[in-house]
Image: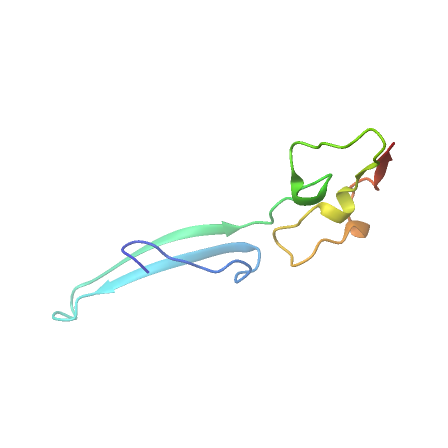
Length: 97
């Protein structure tokens, strides 16, 4: 840590409420001790729906090229290593000709 920073890697804590307590004790004087607490809630992150690969916001296609919008293949769930579209409410793929 640096100064007042605390780093907890992603997916380390389960969802829920945690109490984090920092206790400082002076080495020279064991009688001097101070603590401070804070409550932190870890919640699920929403699914990021991407209609096209890489979630780009601008699409260019030629007049004779198909455009496939497939949120099931390109969406991501930041809380998981992979995204399973079969267990979500995202619409199936759509091909525009």
